[in-house]
Figure (cartoon, rainbow, N blue to C red):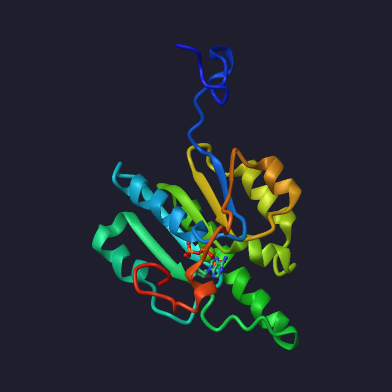
Length: 187
Ligand code: ATP
Ligand code: MG
């Protein structure tokens, strides 16, 4: 059977444990796809840490579900109170810094196999955090750590550094019909 065009030729196939993954685009599904990866990884006994940089006003289902998965999955919402207010930009930047530091501490403690930095791409696109620091981390992160970043407008340097980039396309969204956010779908 002919190989699919997306498959690399055998000589180029190699194993890489720690991928850099971006979920981006204007369509819904970036954060929920990251949660799907977390569920899949936890099922293999892998420890997953998710830091959420911009948390919505709702208590999301994942915050209640994470403890049900035991100690393998932790979610840290850091964005509560994120203002996006130019007058309080310094406070927002400190909040982002605290989230980043928490993530770095979790990785430094060892054993983390997947780190999800949810909405970090938004934070970068508004210059609330230095891109270079993220690129430096990618260059020196543990080889077996999968790093998943979500949000819109990833800088080209991150796309270049990533192994897997998926863009969600908004074909239709219930919001366009005036349908409100729903439990289990949006939060
Ligand atoms: P989700 O968390 O549902 O996977 P997301 O991470 O792709 O969504 P965000 O930019 O983080 O998207 O925005 C989160 C919220 O905005 C979700 O409640 C989602 O339903 C809503 N949303 C995402 N894309 C759209 C869109 N194209 N139009 C309207 N609302 C959207
Ligand atoms: Mg999201």
